[in-house]
Amino acid sequence: MKPTITVCDDITLVTLQNIPADIEFITGVFEKIAEMGVDVDMISLSPAQSSMTSLSFTIKDEELVKILSYTSKLENGKVKPIVSSGNCKLSVNDPEMENTPGVAARVFRKAASVKTDIRLITTSESQISLLVTKSDFDSVFSAIQDSLD
Image (cartoon, rainbow, N blue to C red; front, side):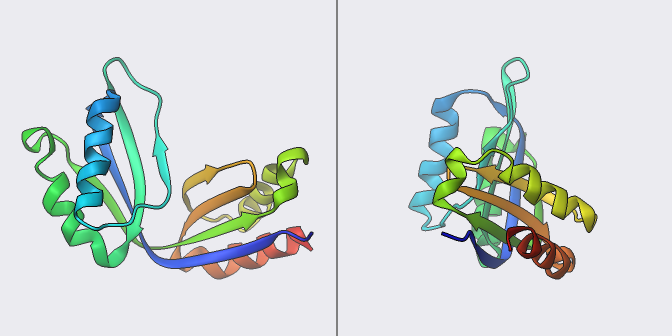
């Protein structure tokens, strides 16, 4: 089976820096976001630096105001969310990826060949997702598509 590429646009990256490296705190963040009816897609947790860490996740651009109204109050306003809107997510999907070394290397090499600005990477056994700026989307999409043919 040939790998497929799926695309989502109008994506905002939210990064919460210097938050407690505590699963209860992180769980509470996502529970509150779910209560607000906001769909979270890509999630990346940085390794803890002492008792603090950084958490990044993506949402649709249209949900940004809701998220900022909540995240700006975290830790009594000490957490300053960093946001980057107007991005696109490209996901390479292939059930065979789990047992095929080098797929991620090929995808990353192609993205590097067009000097794209990658904002976030998440993976699973069968999927590699890259968050890229809208301005880089066309060139990185074409490059990655060529790597899979």
